[in-house]
Image (tube, rainbow, N blue to C red; front, side, top):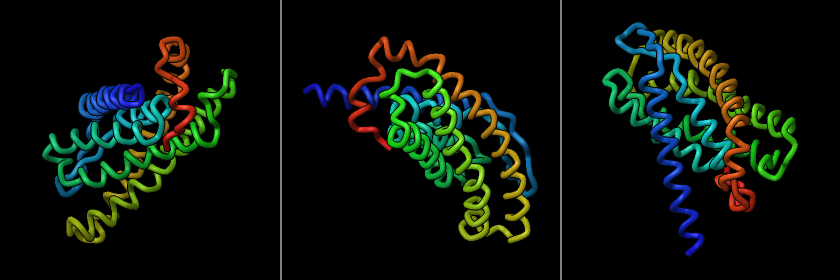
Amino acid sequence: MNQRHQTTTKLAQTAIFAALCYVAFAFLQIKIPVPGGDATSIHAGNAFCALAALILGGGYGGLAGAVGMTIGDLLDPIYIVGAPKTFVLKFMIGLIVGLVAHRIAKINESTDKKYVMKWSVLACVAGLGFNVIADPVVGYFYKQYILGQPQQMAETLAKISGAATLINAVVSIVLAGLLYNAVRPVLLKSGLITKEIRRTKAV
């Protein structure tokens, strides 16, 4: 019964972070129109995906980011065709952040604030660094082979997307790292960071 309660709690927290990811993506963004009626954007959604992975673990955090920002894509006529790509990439961000933070560094088992700060930031660098590379590369092949765009246009869009993704990564690393370390003492005191996370160390 206790395990079921913990799972229910984690799912509820995942839903909350999915909503935060959606709000940050949909309303805290600067949309940049690009050729062909497409667009890219500078937004804060990835920061909350990484934050969710730091707090909940990679699996739940990745799911929160994937669901929240995929919903954002589905509700925007410009981004709707990219929703499948968004789901996969945001889920991978969460998995990688969770892998580094909880499997490699085991930050929930440390009381050293400097250690936690260092590894929480490094985890964000790993997850969002992956996205800086993967987003334009996957986007290029997705637009050319799935959406049928000409190669030159797909290449141009990938370069523009790569620049925006890099800016998003820098902003998100700083924001997620600061937010996590600011709220961590409260989360520990309230029991939202628990031994259950230490046992599973979800990636």
